[in-house]
Length: 308
Image (cartoon, rainbow, N blue to C red; front, side, top):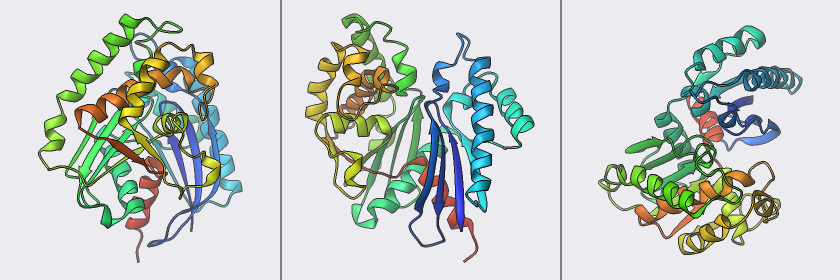
């Protein structure tokens, strides 16, 4: 069957169309996305501004038209931290329903972590043993560990690359701001380390998300054009050396780095600080990159629910 997923993230709104059936690997058939960056269309009180809502409604309507054109049989639509945490999130969801007919389901942070973990488990398989999954989006950081497809622990922290970038206003930011961000991030992650470590050391640690892929690409990982099966890694010692370099760069200079888009360049430093902090506090030497993440986890769970 042909499935579609509309993923309303903090950075990107993405329609992914796949051909799939239960027990098979979902095959990507079509992709359509926009860098909406809802995390930046927020007011001081956290409410999503009118322009952000207007663009969201317009793009969701566009996605529905494309879904019909592409012959989708089942469409799943979900939203993550940007709408989940906005005081006017329910009003935004209602406006989307009223103007497009799309019923966006809001995932909790723990659900994000669990579904991303499921995608990583299916990609790497049972031979990975105890898996630790690190995922960073625009609004939140997700961490999950387990030996099965359902993790023993699934944690979400409000440490997304877009959100944390607001703490670094300069171009480049000041040393004091970078130091303050690093201190805040490490303090927040340190509070939950025991919740993950009490289940035992992981046999395999994986990373997902555009931010992690971009950091790995800057450090020499293969470009996406070489395909999803090329091994890619993010090494902590190399990332630790990269962070101070990024801190001295302007957004324009970061955008010139390999694998970094102009739209994501301003988030790269904050994302690097968060990922390096998580790797340090969790005593992780390297992350193996997983090409599947939340969208694929949603698709896989939907396929699991289909009758055999």
